[in-house]
Image (cartoon, one colour):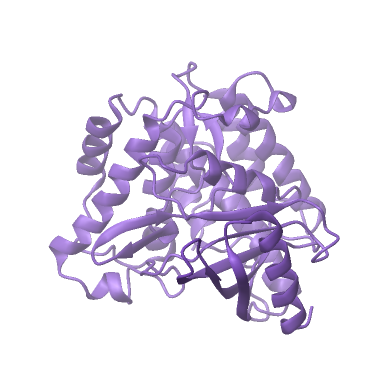
Length: 358
């Protein structure tokens, strides 16, 4: 859609949903990048309040893409619902300005949220090698890491039912939360294979996870993509947690495992040294347990599960890169990536028959 038409359409839509805001203007819509799950635009909103004062906010517009992306079933509404349920909680999420499920206006469902200014640890290039986090003194690197650990520990204390997260229940994938995640990712791997080629390393890892699944654990709310790269820091403080499309019900230990495993994928998985100031596993687990008020039971299992999930997602992303000509010729990014390499290392440790990728 042409930029001025997009701005006009959004201004009219916002006016119909925010009658307290008068003389609404949406300015400077711009599309900085194309996501795999949704299309992201930035724009600026201005309006007059009840007293006649002019106010403004920078906004993010997310439009559900119609192209086949990283996931077969991306649910933009779920991401919005999660952030809506966490408004005015101990979990920092952006302020929301509305969701539109009808594709008539922009061609697809969309939502608007406030753009939170700040710094995000970069993953490409790796924050272990360069960037603002890399440039901080070691004690400040540790502080930013532990702020993230504290945030996912606070999330572990959220009562999903009291906050209205019943919409995350997925009985079609099994009755118990872990079973739901296992079934979902088995089907996800099959879907990814159908778009490229078989992934026996992922099938063997899934079989190990099925055969070694732990006893049911106390449930809770899981962010689903708990990592430094989804945290915004401003003036040294964590001010927003982003990307809730993977949120699900389950044991919150899964978020801790994902946080630890993703960091390992970005250093061990790529053969680079870990950022020196970041606290180690033992200190991180102790900090999370103290904040969450529960033990990190079966953490090793969930770390293997996290590596399997990340390797599965990277297989699909690798296929997209290859199809779009973004991977070097001859480079099989779907199987040669940080997730697959770390999964190989864990396979060697837990003896489920995967070679260590090199």
